[in-house]
Length: 34
Image (cartoon, rainbow, N blue to C red; front, side, top):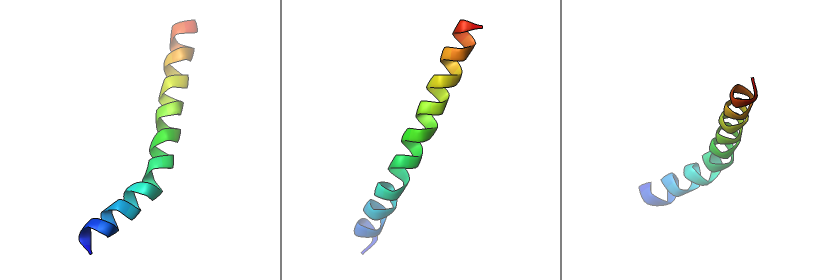
């Protein structure tokens, strides 16, 4: 049960983590330009 639960939560959190990573990359790009 625990394994399937964690897999589901990871699947749900994955998109959010990707969005955060994209934001971090965007911030770094802005910092380099400025």
